[in-house]
Length: 433
Ligand SMILES: [Zn+2]
Image (tube, rainbow, N blue to C red):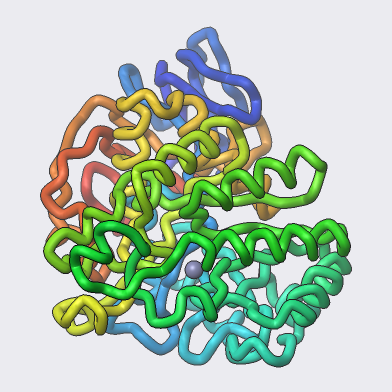
């Protein structure tokens, strides 16, 4: 197979480099060699006819639960990477809440080895803030960084101990590492299982008030200002959080944030008749929160769209609502839900692409996310107008827990390229990778 590839006449959107227009993209030896307005003539290049399609930097997901080691029945690193490239993602950040927790070099090395074996997309590591995610004692941050971790987080759980959080923000600065936070005050969320409001009252379910998230965001902004550290707020769900992050950015604090497609698409009425696929943490909020999150995405308050891809088996979901596990799979529906939001007029296409590429790359300082010469040839080719119906039975992910089964979505991933290798095309993982 040729190591020279020419993507011909696609609409290239590369927000970092201010490109939006028909271009030829030349790839050599796994890297972008040239992006040209004029058609290129290249000998011996493999040609990808991209006319009418979008040629985009490969998407980067800052928040993915690959479940391996420990819960391979829900997902493995291989199936998670398959789902990623099928969704157009060329890089994912693997959360540390595996069994055992990634709070050590040993687990980091294991995940890296499995990712190399899968050889599909880049798998970046998130290490734990605290040992065993217990919130008591800091993990060996230096060792995690040397093992390749690009951020630290106790995601799935908050760091309730403010003193410990403050130390983590201080210590992480030695490595210029973002501290990613799952913002939830457990004394406020309590035994809640969904957003606190009209719907929870109607269903007779215990609610989680917005303050459970917003109060923790407020606390962490105070700690951030004092320490001058680097904070990344995971899965923003509330209007109040968006407001606090916007204000912190305005004052120059080093904060970044992400939002998930489910949080900017569904409100708490999706719980409907106790649909456990609508159970997640943070919970689906209100229409007003959706609007605020969308405004945050549009105006730069929120830097990235991240899926919080959280596979669960049937057993964890086919139970009463208050006993069900939290989470949805997201890698294979993220692009469609994002483009649906573009169609609704809440986001420009350029901004949507930035939120999937440049935004996440910059937030964690990752390679890729753009298509300048020299960049890794991580490229996603999208047919923007093709509509498809979500069929969870056809997911590459091992799990099926999605509230979007049966939904019509715009935007089909035609090809995914990683380091100049075609890893996904027209519904199939490429075996010749
Ligand atoms: Zn979380």
